[in-house]
Image (cartoon, rainbow, N blue to C red; front, side, top):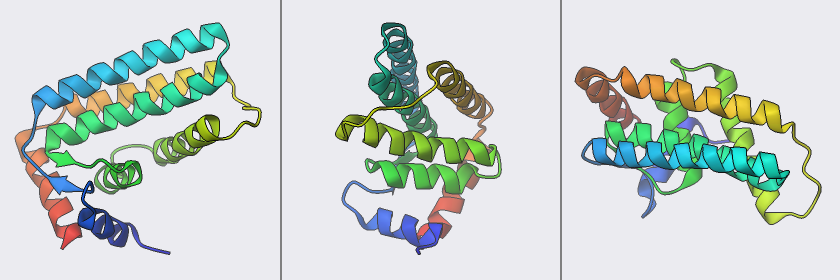
Length: 162
């Protein structure tokens, strides 16, 4: 089994993998808006009883807020597994381990909901509450970013990719 650093190095070698780029507040704002829209869609689908789309939009609400965070610190990655790995590597000490586990589970559940036809067993109320708590926590991390923190995170990632 690959270590997280080995996985990050693999990701960096892929054409749409990890790249350190210019920090972008504009992209951060755009992806925060996408996350907010995913939450609205999640709520609407829950009201309509469409569980498979509650699952999918829950994942995308989380994914887009992570992408907003990474955009703010100057990291681009278009491979979901790699994006999640960068997030875990850079922020595992700042967020509860359960958040990282729930994020991975959300990705797996989204794949199951979108590509397989079995019955989906979820508790929509719990999923919605967990998703909103996750998004809020990441928004708090974004709000507390300083230039020195961004520089330290970029340095940590550069070191891992060497």
